[in-house]
Image 1 (cartoon, rainbow, N blue to C red):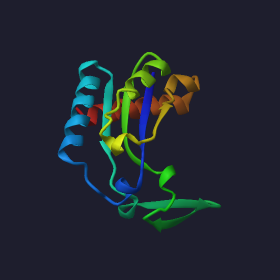
Image 2: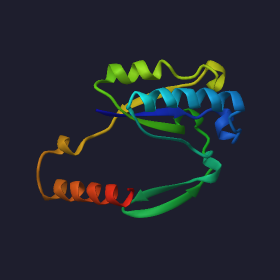
Image 3: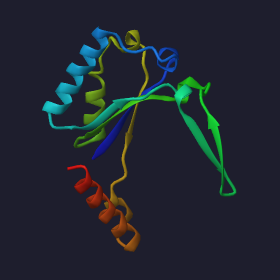
Amino acid sequence: MRFMIIRKADEETEAGVPPNEALLDAMGRYNEQLVRAGVMLEGDGLQPTSKGARVKFTDGKPTVTDGPFTEAKELIAGFTMIEVRSKEEAIEWVKRWPVLDGGGNVEIEIRQVFELSDFGEGEAVDRHYRLRDELAEQNQ
């Protein structure tokens, strides 16, 4: 089972305040644990929304809005993708999150990722399998 660990944004992340050396070190140690356990697939921090944009579709027509966005509690500051046996195992990994992050006051969301097998069989699913394989070849 794959899970996305979502580090919610806060005032500091939205202000573009970079992590200090101690936090970078703590996150590095946390990520090392995930990598050495063989559960980490990917992970990165995100730039603040002031450097981003949103595209909203209304009746199929796109409208682009440049950041920043104000609802910080709904925004994402970073993510980690892990593959574990259960939601409970994902929760146990998140409980090890570095206390230095946000002064110990952060919100982490855990979301299970759909697997192609969740969608049954068919040509559309087969197309997605082929695209996944093509992407894997490109990233080798």
